[in-house]
Length: 303
Length: 289
Image 1 (cartoon, chains in turn cyan, red):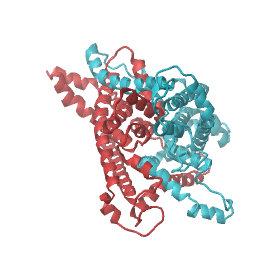
Image 2: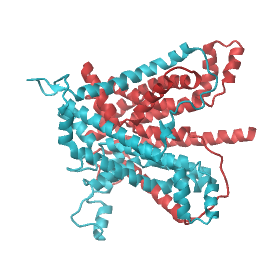
Image 3: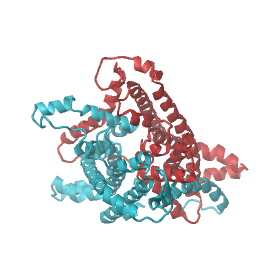
Image 4: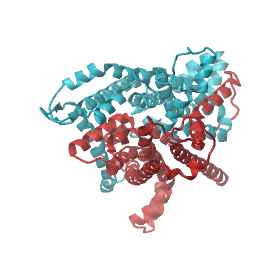
């Protein structure tokens, strides 16, 4: 699975060499690069998150300190945004799972007899990746705007209140997050379902199980590693996203997520400590949720 | 393309295919699922079609209302100088970042498969973490580092950021290719008195090339569409996604749709060509073996 791509100790047995100097030469540049531009930034984010404003300093001037209040302030001020981020991300993950499972099942199991069709459908699933993320979100904004055919149609059919809006609402943000991250869910699901041994499903039928029972007792447990990968791959970027929730895109006045407040604190109001402590909170909550989720789903060999 | 998109794509590129099993049929409504799949795929394509169609819109300033068909925007993309400049920046950043990330990542991938060394699991974790970290955190962290080091943000800082998040994807993609390589081929080269550099450039590198090309394309796609990390580390430098973000409030010109559509068509052609060529290779191998 995607998340086990770095699993250690598998298939490493071929030709162990003694020349550790060559290994060092091959590893060092890349590892140093990641240390310098991935690890050090995380550390400087932690340091920044405790900084205090310089007395009588300009906007955006901070000094190293140990100001715990940055965290309590951030939670006090942006508690609503933090909660919203995770609620939206959870909702989008659930919708993406419901949308993707039948799709991945058809491509991975039913379409096995036609490899060409299977490949074509996979290309269609990842096609959205090749058009700008921002433009495809803006496209939905126009397609679902108040003047659009879809919304006026729904209103004419009385399926929507005449004065209701879609864009700018939490529903629109969740819709956008779901749409943008569907391929993240579909591809890992597809790659486990494609390996599903269909004889097991036949066995279920032979043992007088109803199709729905076979599905929940055989298919779902066997595709669990795909579900876990898909859920993580959807949830993590969705929780940190700030495009969909932005007011110029699908969001409105009351839809800002953590990403939006991190961006505005960092780039607009130059309140670096607040942005940094929010980033650390985001990362910590994601790590806790991901660990708990992976433990519960019993796929602990992901890392 | 975002960082996590690359993870999914890398998976699609590297996942081994099981043998096809024929003659499996079972319930769940024989037409319900195909019909759903068709609708789902159409749904996924709606915004792409919309973006493509509106690249032909004879719009004046706002590209929202349909004002008639024109090829004008395709013929004169660079009339909107800012769009073209942003696009040019994105190309330069994409190419430089791809070259650097591909070299660094390929070296790591070879080391991971071919050599034993200490701290292997720590290194694997270090490679995995950037892919599991939200982009806002990656972007803000790097920006905080540049800030405390007093580095001026611009083209260079964007490239540094892009190389950082591309390296892990190169490693995943190339690693899959290295592990399929038969070490006996290199041994044969050494037995025939090939110097280490001859063995690498004449044997190892050509065999790894398909994996390296896939990794480079993935890196370029990631870099080209990255917005969140770029936004934190770009200063006043514009990139194509950043241009769209900034002009979203006042309306996107149709020229942006032209560029996005052209890139889309090119990417799909590349994907189809690679699919067809690998299918042909499989067929040829099946005939030989």
